[in-house]
Structures are given as C-alpha cells and as structure tokens.
Length: 485
Ligand SMILES: *Cc1c(COP(=O)(O)O)cnc(C)c1O
Image 1 (cartoon, helix red, strand yellow):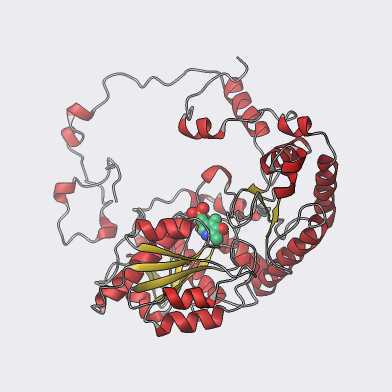
Image 2 (cartoon, protein in one colour):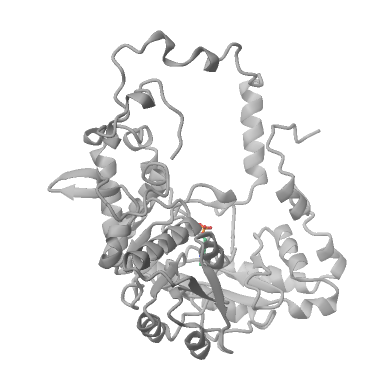
C-alpha cells in the first residue's frame, strides 16, 4: 500500500527485509538536515483561502441543512439500510485513545485497539457461524472482491485451475457480478423462478467443473429469503465449487439463521448497514469477510493474533492473498460496530432483525394497494413495488420518488432491481416507528391523487431542485463556491 513517508520514519532505504513491518515508525534520533530532499520542500506558503471563522461555520451549517440524513427523517432507500445509528457509537469512536492512535504505532501501545478488533472478529464469527474474519475490506463490494480472491487462491492451491466461472442469480446485488468480473471471472447469470427465488433447474444447468463459486445475495434484492438455500449449497459443493454469501443485509436474518449454518463458505457483512455507522454520500464503511476454517490460510495479511492477553499483528501467512487495504481497515467504523453489537447484545440483535422484518411487512401490506408488489408474499427487510401503472397517468416512478422529497421523506431506491419494471424498493429498517411509516403511506396516497404536473416538476420544496444526475456525476464540482451567488 502506498502512503506518504512521515518525518519520524526511517527512509525506505534504511528498511531491510528483516525490519518487522510494524516497526517502520521508529523515529531517527536526530533527523539529518536533508531528511526531506530540498526539491520536495515547499518554497511558498500553500494557497489556502482566508475566510473568517463565522463564514466557515455558516458554510458548513448551511451544507448540513441542505443534506438529508436519518437524523433528519425517514430514509427508506432500499438495499442501503439507512437506519438510525445510536449516538453512543460516535461517543466511543471519539475517545482520544481510539481517535488519536496512528496505524504505525508500536503494537505494545495499541493493545486496546487490537483487542477491539479481535473482539469484533470473534463476535462477527459467532453471528455468521464462520471460523475466522478479516476486517480489512472498506466496503461491501471490496469484501466481495476479497472473497473472490480467496476463492481463486483456494482452487489454485489445489491445482484446480479450470474454474473460471462465477454463477450469479439475476436477483443479486449489482456489485456481485461486478466484483466477479473485477476478480477476473466469467460471470454466468441465472434467471429466477416465478417466485423470485433461484431456479434450481437453471442452477443445475449452469454448474460444471468450470464453476469456481456461486454468489448468493440472501435475502435477495427482492427482499425474499432464498427458500432453497440448503439445497443450493449442496448442489454447488457437489460440483466442487465454493459458496459465497452476500450478507450485506444481515439485519434480515441475524439471530435467526446464519450463512455458516446454511452451508456457505464465505460471507461479507456491511458494518455500515446492519451494524451502524452513517454511510450517506459514500462515507467510510467496512465490509469484513468471514470464512470457514479451511479458507483461513488465504485471509488477507496481517491478521490479529491473541496469545494469552497479548494481541499482535500476524504477518506469517504464506498462503495469504496479501493485504487488501492500507493498514488494518477503517478502524473507527469497526469500533462503532463493536459498540453497537455490545450495547444490543445477542437478544437485542435478534430483536433488531424481528423489527426490521415486521416493519417491512407492515409497510408492504400498506403500500401494495397503491403500488403492486410483483414478487413475494412475505418479505424480509425490504420489498420491491412497481410503478408500472403510473405511466398511464403521464408520469413515472422517478417523478413519484422526487415528489416524496417535497413531503419530507427521502425517496426509496428506484429502477433497481431490474427484474421489476419501474422498481420502487422500500426498506424501512428496524428503527422506524409505526407513526413514521403511516405518515409515509399517507404522503404516497396524497401524491398519487395529485395532477401529473406536480410530480413532473418535483421537488420544489428542497434547497436543490431536480438535478441532472448524469451531469452531476460526470461533472463534479469539488471546489468551494458561494452557493448564494
Ligand atoms: C449495499 C450492498 C452491497 C455493496 O456494499 P457497498 O458497501 O456499497 O460496496 C452489496 N450487496 C448488497 C446486498 C448490498 O445491499
């Protein structure tokens, strides 16, 4: 991993192969004058804008007011689990002992941090029924990529090199096929049956001695639990392939069942979804990967080792796929997850699942008379309605979604998954009340009776109107600008 050298580190040339990797930060006693080469020294002060404190505070306060977050209101963005994160997680993550440590600090001075990571690994292993975890991946998709690299290492280790295909059902999260392709695999998509679950005949036809793995998002993106998960696991193993579980939405099953118990070999979790941490705007996340014991040798290095009461970073993994992230992962996100898990406890986590599922089913029942839900009769943490019929009224799902903003609700995910025409994907999460969900349904009902023009021009009550999303993504403005001008 690349990083900038710090003044108190030895020059790279001083690091020999024998230098323990965690000891890079030993400061030279008397840094030489030319420690930083003259050509790299700044000759003039940096051109930082000079503005008064008041203007800076107003700038950021205004930006905060323009933003929507779970602390502002209901945020039913399907597949993203935008739930309320208890403030205790922020308090702990802000303790100086955690906040101010440096990743290159000597292990003996970071025992508390190492304990926290080790403890989290053990708890995640329990929750998922896995044997070992890496905390390095910084996001769900990153976890998938890490898992696929381990799958490849496993097959290659056994001299089983023809396995070039990864099977992905069409109800998978979009990152699954993308990660498989990034990892160099050929993606084989299989269609779902009429019930929205994996079609076992299609799976059987796709499985062969070329199959490296099956990636299963469960519950799938229709919010439906794969009823044949056990049979699927058996079929895939019999073909000599591995089973990857996309557990980003663990809040749908945690405490009830676990990927390991269903026969899966690897799983990633999204700590920034199920286990708290605000994650709007692509902020820092964590996508730890759990594996069954036979895959442990391939875990990214270093792992965290415990000997008695002493914790250390273990680099001795000859079969490791290597590090996948600078240092040891997004430490404060890991810490927040640990606090969340410890404060809820096993029963609390199970209750979170029950509430997430109960809320989703309550809302589905209320919404289905307004917008039909083509797949499923009972759902897990989310469901996908269809705005197909809206076209007859002269507008489409995106207009409905934008109009919801005017009523003080964040829009659900729209146009995903592709299986549902004009998809409207709602995930209420366990932290919403019945009152909040009822208000959301009432707003939907009101909007559906409004004339088309109201929706076409929406949103009109927000600080920013409808943006050209393609232009916004391609032409990002990162510089400070006076938004009042
Ligand atoms: C959110 C999500 C992902 C991707 O996670 P990122 O952290 O956004 O990379 C993968 N799979 C499922 C099922 C998800 O919901």
